[in-house]
Image 1 (cartoon, rainbow over the protein chains, first blue to last red):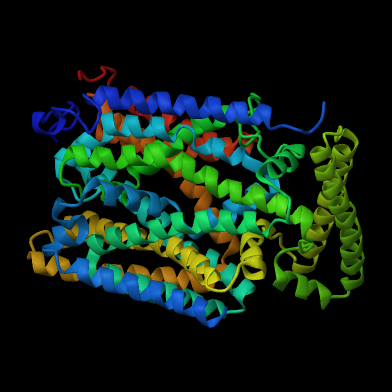
Image 2: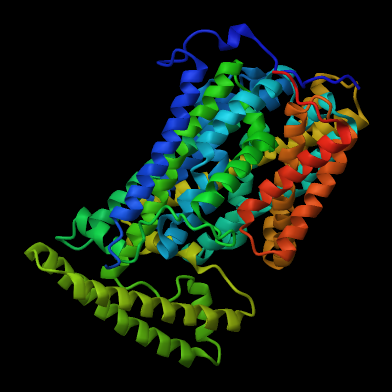
Length: 55
Length: 559
């Protein structure tokens, strides 16, 4: 059985150029990761600031 | 339901069938039936990915869970955006460029036929029964709440879904999912608005937030390290990441969606779309549950929401006990309601609400204790335990939502069930035809023949799912067993795909043995420890990867 599929395929037509407002895929992925971290921080702040269970 | 409700409900089914028929004319051959000739836009695929994941239980069960425990369930989804990035980088390019019809077909290209067949078989068993549960779970709840016959509810759901899936294949499925998902968004917004407007005059957003906060209902992040605690930030980040990778990266019902894209970029965009939208959507759905919790401070809720179970207890010799609990519950609720109003007055006057807050908090604890006692009583009478939280939201809908809107919200629950079921049917059909029929039984038939067999497979799986749904009430322990096996298999399957993508020297035998040992390891961990089920996927994936690497080689692939 040929050992296919283990090398990351490349296709310049698919990955070149900007993706919407993002200049590269790397920029888009970084934005998603930052977004996930911001969500965690927001939910943590909500958890702390909206806890009125008492002193 | 009133005439306007029926009108909206009927209009929904007419719209879905009409739209599916219109879209289905664009399909050509078996590639059209399973992959829409790889020409769908990312926005439609993205919504279909969301619709496939969000079943009726997402709307019914999640709101009920938030009513009971608050927002902590959100933690399961916090790693989902990260999973989408990993999938876009490591998974989607391999699937897309291999030009496969199913995720498992790729495993034969990479490893061997036995690994492909075993993974496809596990998928068929798990998802075949899962498709029945997708219909059964909302049907039983809607039957209790609306008084409809359970069989009729299942048959309506199955008949319409089978009809449009059979007619238009994946194209019809994706485009009807778009309608169904947009309806779901509308339904969530409508439910939130209706809940806010149903609050007593003078109760504002700040009051709702404050009352919810007294019972820590807004607590979304739990930093504790206890691995037996199901929902913590760590189980969400690690277990949730592996769960999302396994579900979106190896389950044919999801992989098939992004294989329909016009290009690799469009495939990736559909997942990135989910990365941004999924968590806010879950937040809104959970917020409905917390709002219900606050709403029932001012309106008395039923002691037990499942009216069929209440009727059963009231006809039993233990009816007196239940009545006593109900009286106690009413008395406690009246006290909490009065305290809630006093608290709002005190807040408005700028007074210290401390004592009133403690009174409400104490009443909440007492009310929960009485409810737990009632649930235990119901379980005793029934002989089995039941999940009352699933009845919280539907009970609210039928009791408080105005005519017209009720039809819309019930249609949303049907839409959620059908948009998951249709994806399962196309996925089951594709795995049956591509991974078994074409691979092993009849490899050289014409395209027209495979299209006919594919439609037949859709019909057979639809009927099988309906049969499971009819029998689901009697299959309790079997279904539980299948679900357990499913959770054992998900992480292990992820391990096989990680081996395929990341380890150059991994072999089919290593992956096959690793898959079996991975499932055995998860079964052992589940039996011998109390760790959160969210970690099962981590265990399965790590064991398969380690075994596959050890048996096959150790050099990681060059990128």
